[in-house]
Length: 165
Image 1 (tube, helix red, strand yellow):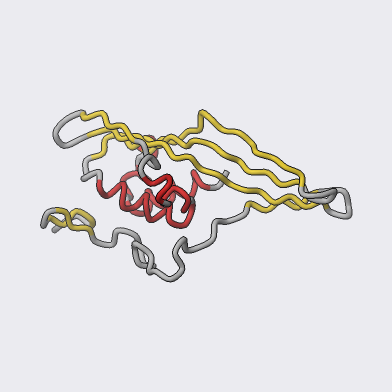
Image 2 (cartoon, rainbow, N blue to C red; image 1 turned 45 degrees about the vertical axis):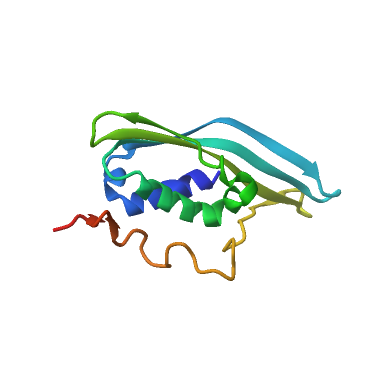
């Protein structure tokens, strides 16, 4: 499964403190299943479908930073969660408010990763994890420009990323 690692890399790039203390960004899959179908005698395709739980411990920045980063990641990695039919319940979350400045925030994502399997002449299989089409809306600009994520973020007139001098 590639998507959990991809999401971790995005969060660690945007928030280097998570890379320095990886225990603060926990991920796991409790529910998953394989949807499979035969595509002919030489093709066996399947999809890995699972719910990824993500926990950000000791979060001290506004939670809107999490959602902006996550939605831009979903735009490429799981665009169906941003469609009108799923948008209202796409990202369930919980927060444990520890203090006025700190919370543990968790959210669940229903993710899929299709795999195309082709039987080889030598008896083996070629397997390819099929990427989502990019971008979801090709005629629109991405939510975040193609430069380092969260190069600068301001919330209520205060610069949060990078830390204001």
